[in-house]
Length: 267
Image (cartoon, rainbow, N blue to C red; front, side, top):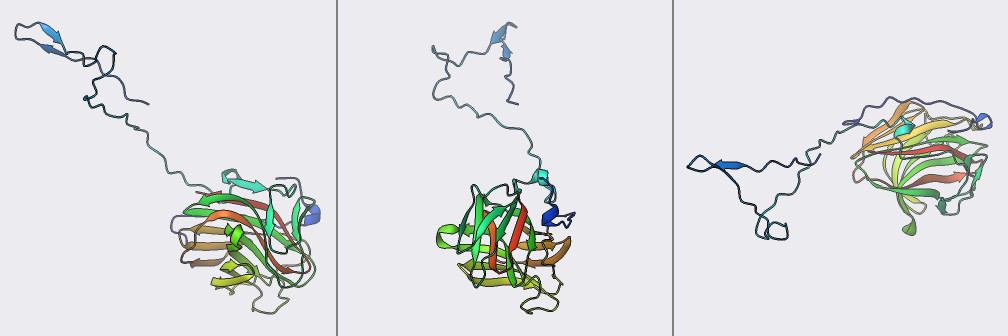
């Protein structure tokens, strides 16, 4: 579970056909005075040379910043705190690796190449952070949809990345009972090494264009996945880091997978 993070999570379902438009320096002290034995005041000698500068052997202390930096917590549920959000008005700035059929249609990112493959559409590099969160809304169409995924720490040149995957959302492959699984994997191309998983929750979701919102939260090695407001994965994952270069994943989505409202938070 979270070590320092307390989340209040809210989500909603909507249909792609009913989608609405988007979303102080130190003070100078006065010269001191000393009193001579005869009682007359004497001003301290001036330590500057003819140029007005202090002699080179005179030590001067650097200014000290006395400001106190506040440690303010961010909300991973408030898009005002997000570093980035996109409504997918277009595909400008995005790239992809793998044999995916990516495109933007009506403000939604779409991929629907059938068969055994893995593809990642990616965007910005957010560098490394101790705490980060990535959220997206996901919908499906048709049948034989296998994997949706949130990608982070992508090395695009070497096709290597971390991914949180939602597997078999309609139970078309009958791998789990109840339907579906959440997992965290490290992948090289289409070959993924599952590092942690949880299939005890029913993650069945209709394939009718309705969106489900899910969110990956990372705090050190503590990882949590929320799906439709419910914690469906909570484990420690050794070696995890990110978010780095982020993106979205698709694998064997014959009917089609749709992504919207993709947001990234870093602390």
